[in-house]
Image (cartoon, rainbow, N blue to C red):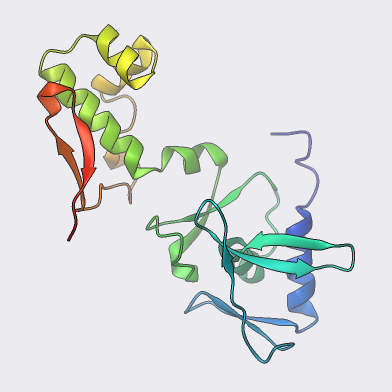
Length: 186
């Protein structure tokens, strides 16, 4: 927990206020927010990380809040622990339907990345092909201990984290020759 754990995220509070005043009406099925001020759905912008972002004028300046967090807060309320994050289950940052959102810890959210699992599978394949732990640690910038844990299936095991399967367009090329991930065009 951080030193801010006893506080509420300011943006969560602003979202609740917008909903309570009737300014924003959530559409949980489609993952959109209807604004009574503009008499239509809000058009979010996309930030550098690919998330849809809404701008809130609080009277104290403008604040940005991600659409998926706003929808989750409007349905479930403000989380007791402000360090919790709202995660997209299917990893599609544009899919903000409520059925695709869940509240997770920061560490669970970081661990829940398909690319890391694909990388772990590449490490396992290279180790099986004869690469040494030291070579893999240097190549992937992990400690040798982490490489040993990955190879022993103690880290990044898909069965423990549903929804982390590698998408069909992600393909491991030449695992015996160093291995790298390529994107296939459909």
